[in-house]
Image 1 (cartoon, rainbow, N blue to C red):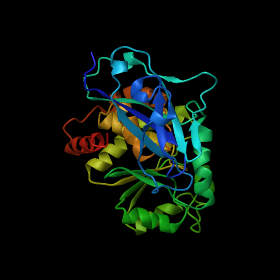
Image 2: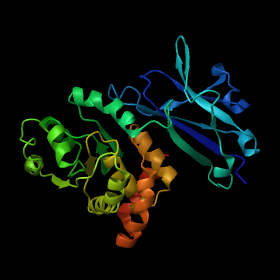
Image 3: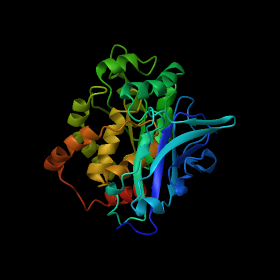
Length: 324
């Protein structure tokens, strides 16, 4: 039976502009009984500290006795604008529904509900990525987000100043999941990557940074499932030895995120839902390939096992859980 003091964490990723409040409203009194004026306003993670085309992560911890009592609870997210509200578009007469069975046996004081995307819960990965990345590419930006003190995830460097930024952040090893064609189309300008994708390695070496290239097919569950065991183990070994890792692909949405997720789950032992909340709060634009993670888990265990005595792993896990 769920604890009487159990809180539910509602979380949503939204492209709403900075300063636009997100709220959750639903069928029970705890969620305002569908009255937008009584909706529970959520907290943004990044606010004004995000790029123009970057979404934000919003959350609210709510005590819902109605759910714990076994009642059916439906809910939606909405944006609060000065002139009114914008509801999620989930289809005619459709709402989200809390599945009490998914957490009724939990003994944790905080139950993490699935992190969803506002108004587009089943949108294609390509649409989600493009909405964010086109702006980053057109403006020649780099999007870097810290997951843990020794792990950053983001988009590909496009200028030599971006590499200098990574260096100033203390990054000592860059792991790139772009394919050769990706490197030619999304590269550091002015160093010859269009002809030689490995040209960037000399820039990193000149700054005392290690560079690892692990080409992986884009938007491919098969590709990510194949890459994940090795990449997750690589991240673990690098971090155990004191490196600070920057994981990137083109957008820093799919492949590089998957590698970081694999590290959190396989090496540190986070539960899938814990991992999702840690990653989504740090990198709101993240795409989660749970199928690839599930397929790669057994292979990771068979190949590398679990070093439960690694002090660095324990420290990093405590750091990750402190974000929840």
